[in-house]
Image (cartoon, rainbow, N blue to C red; front, side, top):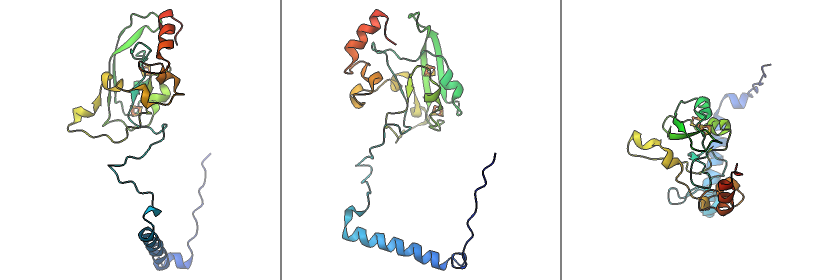
Length: 191
Ligand code: SF4
Ligand code: SF4
């Protein structure tokens, strides 16, 4: 059922605008005065020298998760590319030697210029193979091709940059849990 949003009635003084304009100006002048007295009054960052510390769940540039041996967790099921509203994920699958996963991506590309950073691909993935927790939110490049990130680029991340309690990341090569995970991987008990 549609939700009716009530529109507030403007008072006479709000309708003539002048009072509201001066109230706005008074706020601006008050903050300008405070920032002159105390430079720390505003939490302004000296960007780009100082980067904002984005929360881990901010939908930033994607990464492909890795198995303990460094291969992608992706099983080329195409669920992410099917869910993607921008049609910007391009996957080419091949048969995997591991009978448990059947397929793997021989090519996995995301066109970041088409991507709308909705996170549907992450939600759709059945095996936690794609994430957007890199905190890489500022993207720049010299040409359009530079914004198409391939499998190598998507797997170019270091477990040291991720929290210790992010177990899946720590099981990747270089992670604190990699040695243990590698044993499970070779014994066939890794998931
Ligand atoms: S974030 Fe959204 S638009 Fe971008 S690749 Fe994922 S599903 Fe597609
Ligand atoms: S990233 Fe996930 S959803 Fe996309 S093809 Fe790989 S396994 Fe399937």
